[in-house]
Image (cartoon, rainbow, N blue to C red; front, side):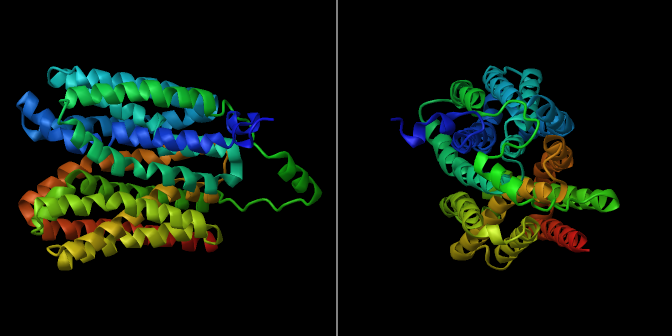
Length: 410
């Protein structure tokens, strides 16, 4: 008799194994496509012998294109299913990493970076959330929490891994290795375990029988002007949070050292953010069922300016800086979850991929601008002015989410 863990029901596309598969591919996805750049950017700059602005300029150009194609990617997911889109996306991501490793000048570098950032819309969390929604329908919230919990280890694993690999490989060799990981790990998992085109949510037979016996009320999704206003508030909040997260992620060490922390202490504080994400996601998974997603959204949003305020008043003290990292990490971790659960709560599963694509587009633009704006702020205004900017941006995002919660109750 086959073990239940390896039964056909467990292994079927869209079944329980979907969470494990997506958790692995999100960890590898963010670990190979997003986090290494922070570690490798100085080495890329040194190899080409140009100013750092050119290195980050390629990233910005790619993020801008990613914002432009995000709605198209979402529409393709709704039309053809996540199996096709994420499988092709993994293949394109692997080839883009290999192309980046072979870049020999500014043109080939920017083209490779543009291709790389453009395909991330097909393999990162928004696409994974669409896969879970297509497979689980309205029951996707817990699954979204579970894959983000697994994916939260991406920075914890791949920041030190990338740094360690620099002892035996140059940045080109590391990107070649990560390109092969996309092709040999992520692509097969997406091909085998993701659902194909799903016309209606997958409902377990027992749940379907119960629903037939006791009709459940239809969820009250927003419509008309309330829907439009909610979309604008959500897009604004996600965009502002994306700005703060991108700025801090790309310039974490410079920010912490600007407050007077030693380099080793700054690295140690930065390493706390990954576990902070995991703690926040674990808490949501264990206790979040009784809390509406929109409430979780504004609560976690306020943690971000609170963390920046701690940094402002005591950033030269490692303990206070560590508390900042915890608050920022928990907020960042929960933000990843609410990016999937709040749109599902407000707008429903129909056209979910396209909805996430439209919500992501402006946020990718702000993420592209954030590293440039923040580095200029650090150079010309210093860490105090730059931290005040982060407080203002993140607090405005929290206010937008509180207005969204109020709009839903009206």
